[in-house]
Length: 176
Length: 265
Image (cartoon, rainbow over all chains, first blue to last red; front, top):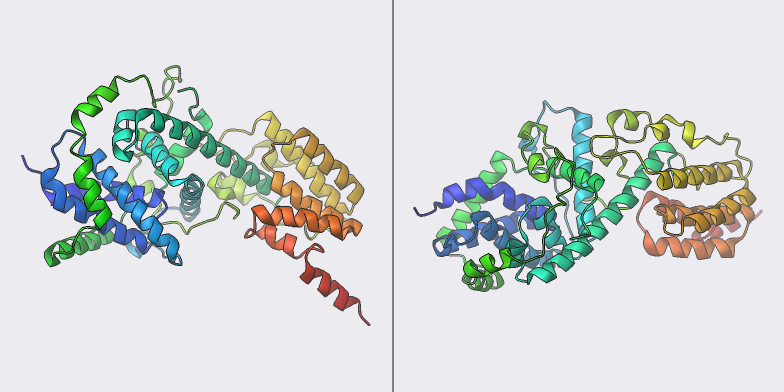
């Protein structure tokens, strides 16, 4: 049964959005990249032969689009814009909301400390939980390279998190 | 794979991914309309992506099967305790519990305490104080970090465990160092800085120690040493609040010029 773009978009828009964000894209580049990903999906959907998971195929496209837009973003002054106001959930406790936003922001900041290749592998393995062969396919590298990048990425991620946590603890206790 | 994420890091990651923003309905619809508009207008695919996407997906099938029997494993350790939360579980968090906004972009040098803190820990944190503001003659009593409620029960949200013994010892030492600076006890501060360097050569608060070196040197009137430490600090961190305090110290030309001007009759 042929895949319908509408359904594919509906099922994967959030996945693409989060992974583009994790790779380091910010508004307004983030929106441009989202559209490029689904433009590719729309054009290529008939070529998708279901020999891999649709999610894996789409993430692969998203990472390539992200890579291109990251280069573009570096050349531009980054503009930090909030997401749509209609995302706001009025029922959520403001403190919890602020805490969650800071935690997500810290996640993105730590990921940004990894180089692009390691960041991609880390996201795919530790967050999207893809298998080694799937990751190798997405990043177009062999499995040993993937394993090596992942090992380095895990080490760096844990190191930066430990450092930030120590700073936060000290701030909570003393304030610098 | 021997180098897997430790449990604490994994749990923090699970919690952080659950906190990530999601697309709003309106945003999602607007982006889709944009895509369909480009399709209708016959906008070309980005060249790089178009070429790669055509190539990559031809070679998938058998290759994946062959790789799947390889020895490299990215999955978690089989001896992991049963019931350990997984990232997959985090993705099942109801959308109502998720933050609605895309966070502003932080740098790692910005304060992110609440990214680790429980509400209680955050709300009971003492008011901000500055190492840079510690001056000779200051009378604030040193505080014992171990007796501080925030130390005794540090930011222990569901994603963060208690600090280990090394980190606790390092925090205690840094607290003592800050107290010395606040008391204007530069000699004591110097001794504690040396102790930190000896005990924690790869500590988690190395930059903070370097900032303390700047302030201790300023208290002793040793501008050359303050400048060296400030240069070292600013090479690693040029944008945080602490960096601003380092810049405002005796170590910088601007601060020195201000002192000179204010000393003129």
